[in-house]
Length: 503
Image 1: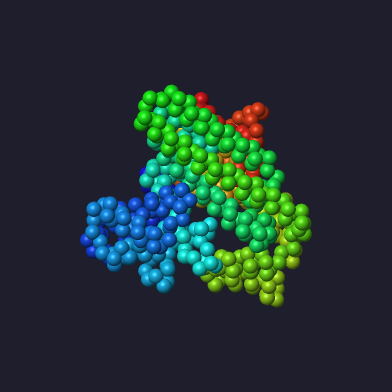
Image 2: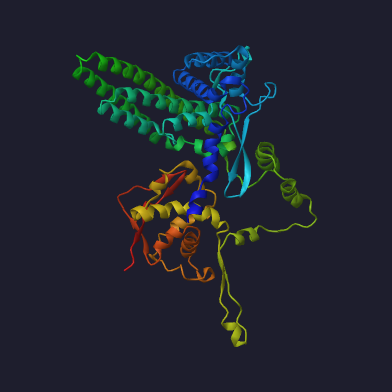
C-alpha cells in the first residue's frame, strides 16, 4: 500500500520541481555559484511585478540590469562577464545563437520510463513586442516560472478571480491590509494571463475562423448572458471592497500608519478594477466577433459527415503534432494503398463499441448447454479508470459521500484523468442504478458481471486501503432542488454517491 501511494503522481511532482532544480544549474559564474538560484529567483520576481504593473521594461538589457541590481542588493561582487552569463542563462540553455529551451528528465510512473521535460522560464510578451517596427523582445514569465512564484507563496493552484476577491475581502475584514495588497498582485497576475490568452485567441480567430470548429471551449456565444452575469458579480465584489476600505479609513482617521496602508490598497484596487474591466470588454468583444463570423460565414460551421484527409489528418494532425515512430505513419497510410480493405462497411466499428453476450447455440449434447455466456466488457484501459476513481473513493472513505462538484474543485491534473477514457465518466452514470452491496474481495474477477463491481475489485487490488468498502452499501442521493452540474461542456444530473456501513 505504501509503495503505491508513494508512486502516485510521481511524474507530475518531478515536472513541477524540475524547473526549481534546474534554475542556474551548470552556470560557470565562479564564486557566485552558491548564490545563483537566489539571484535568479529575485530576477523572476522583478519580472513578475513589472508584468503586474504593465511595465514593459522587460527586455534583455532590462533583465541584465535586474541581475546587476540583485547582486548589489545581496552585497555580492560580479564582473560584466558573470552578469552577462547569468542573464543569458535565464533566457535559454547553451549558446545564444541556438536559443535552446531547458530540458530535464523525469520518471513517468505510468509508462515506467524516463521522459524529457522541455520548458522555459521566460517567453516573448506579444502584447508589448513589436518586432515589425524594429523593436526588441519584451519578455514575460512562462506558466512554469509563474508556478514557481505561486509555490513560493504556498499556493500551488491558481485561484479564480472571484475566490481571490473573496479572499481579499476576508483579509480587509480582519485588518490585514498589507497582505490584502499583496494578494491583489496575484489577482492582477490572474487577469493578465487570461487577457493574454484571450488576445491570442482573438488574433487566431481573425486569421482563421475555422478554429472555432476545433476550439469548443471558446464557443461562448450561447452562454453570453451567464458570462456577463459573472462579470457583473465580480464588479460588485470590487464595489464591496472599495466600500470596505472607505469605512475602514473613516474608523481609523487618527492612525497614520493604517491610513497609509489603506491608500496603497485603494490604489491597487483601482488598478485591478480597470484591468478587470478591460478583460471583460475583450471577452464580450470576442463573443460578438464569434457571433458575427457565424452569421456571415454559415458554411464554415455546417456539420458534415465527410472527412478530408488533407485537413483532418495532414494539416490538423501530421504537420501540428508529428510522429514519434514510423510505424504510426504506416498504420495511417497503409489502408489507403492496400489492395484489400480491412472493412467494407463501418458496421464492425459500431459493434466494437458495444457490450454484447456471446451465447452458445443450443446443441443436442447436454454438456454444452451448461456453458456460461462470455461477456465482453467495454472498458479497455482499466489502469487509467481506477486511477481517476481512486480520488472518488478517497473522498467516500473520509466523508461518506461524493459529488462531481467535489471533483471540479480538485487539481487540474486529477480532473484530466477523467477525460483519458470515456468509460471513466460512463461509470459515474452507472452508479445511479439500484444500490450496490459490495461483495467482491473474495470473488474471481471473471465471475463479476457488473462493471461497478469490477471497478471496486480492481481498486481494492491496486489500493488495499479501499478493502474497507467490502460489505458496505453504495447508493446515490438526488436533491431535486439542485441545478445540474456543468463541467467541461457536460451537463450532469446532480446526484451524490454515498456509502453506508454494512450491518
